[in-house]
Image (tube, rainbow, N blue to C red; front, top):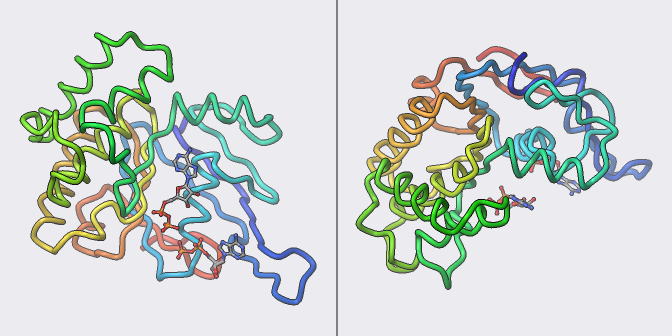
Length: 225
Ligand code: ADP
Ligand code: ADP
């Protein structure tokens, strides 16, 4: 089974109003186990909408969303939340780390919410931070870290609960080009090592070229890019 399978996904906003806008018009996409797919789209094309639907943060109007072989259409909020917490990790352009907690604590907390013990959660957090080269920053709060370090911690948090699928929206988009290149390399290495599947939105064609496959969101459908 693909780790993510979208089929005939449609989504419009402002239903029945003059301002109604059909953003997704029948999106089909399979992301295989271990596959890293670049999602390329101009601003406003609907990539955030697509990532939110794929990650069960939003629902489609029609079509099917399967995660790790499980059909999610029609599931209630609690079941969707359980699947999202267990199987999906998110990274955004901005890190969204909790400012009053250390890097380590930011990676420990989502594990505690998933029932992992304090000691196991701390060990995993430390291992993740070290794997992306910020182990020595574990006790620092986000504000005391550089933008690149903050994003590396955000990757670790996304992977804290060992998801099957990583969804990323311009994960290095707020970094300068050199840092972006370097930090993206860290993300890709972490994804490869873990064997997880990823759908990563980017405007950066050099970064897209480093992924296994590229798709473009064009007039509400996905085409090879
Ligand atoms: P992207 O991430 O590619 O920039 P989005 O998915 O955020 O695109 O948005 C796609 C289109 O849908 C845009 O025209 C945007 O204005 C519109 N849109 C997004 N969210 C909403 C919403 N909650 N209500 C109405 N329109 C929305
Ligand atoms: P944008 O791409 O619109 O600028 P941000 O990068 O600021 O968005 O990320 C904030 C997004 O986090 C919001 O669009 C929101 O839908 C999303 N979100 C909401 N709940 C959660 C959640 N539980 N986990 C992760 N992201 C969430």
